[in-house]
Length: 132
Image 1 (cartoon, rainbow, N blue to C red):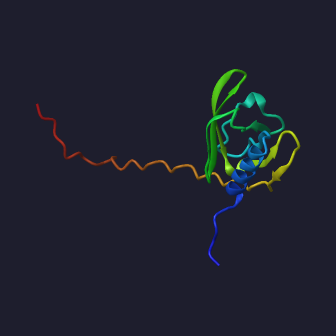
Image 2 (cartoon, rainbow, N blue to C red):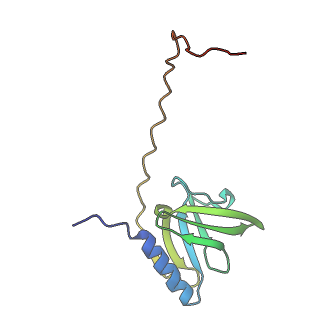
Image 3 (cartoon, one colour):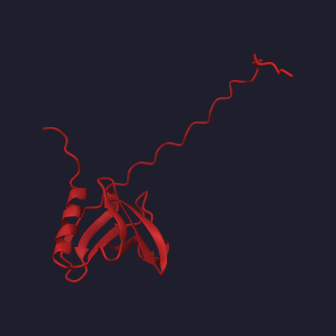
């Protein structure tokens, strides 16, 4: 059987649409220690943040297969939010808690630091000349 793409982004979009279709308020619970999460740190509690992603609360909402992005106001200040899909812990309705929780995704390994470039210029004479 061939490898299939992860179902998490599709489930998040489906639950979000279902909650909105029922006139409720969609919230995302996000693991803020996951790499790539960009949220206002003043609102993080115990390594998580709950974000209201209802259409009336956000603009420029894009739920892609790799990340969810949107603009929202926090304390009156506009901010762009970025949430990798694997950082989403749950998507649920504020009013009744119905939705879906996800198993925590493994944090991707950090890429190795770049190797310093070798300086091969030592001992070599340039073939360039200064022309006046």
